[in-house]
Length: 307
Image (cartoon, rainbow, N blue to C red; front, top):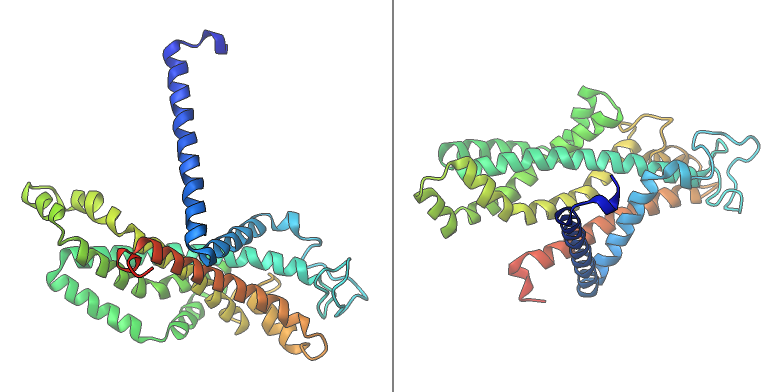
């Protein structure tokens, strides 16, 4: 349709939408600047996380070579202009393998956190809001769940499901459900005693409406914080599984697998084989932890007075 033939009301509506979008973008930018100014470490960590996501999403574009291609006669080379981080014992480009390993970490981390956050939030929300015997029984089940060492439980699940990308994500996600449910339950127990929730109950609002309109929006902050911190833990767990040979199977490049196979076997000859994936794991996990701590300091009212 010709723009000149648009009705005045249509043009007004379009201008209103554009103005609203512009305000949202400006507010988001201002919020980001305030966050970086108040929490510099959190801001730098957020930038590191964004860079990691960008690298993972565009791995085929930013990598110099196919991570599985073996360059004959170029074994265990030091960093050079041709191979930025050197080559491994099979002549594969380490930089390309580290970049593609970031994609594996992002997929496993997000899938695991999604499973753990949704499952743990549902359990904690229902258990705390319902209360009574249901809460008692569910919490005893969670206690038994937490009693298993986290890595041992994940190893058992991977052994039962079989090592693959999504099975590893499922196992790690299931392992994070109990801790998430505890945090969400604590937040819901505090929120449901507020006057607006009691008033909604008094006027006959249904439980589903109360949960959707009053409880869930007020416990989203701790859910987002625990999800952010859990991403770092999930990436570390995936790297641990790959290091033990129970993660994503080769030849897929993973940071933990690079440390376990070529890194451990040829570290004496070429120490950089273990340095690069180790630095990637350390940097990303630390970034998620610091970013989660910064979000907690900003969003938790109990911590604002001390800063």
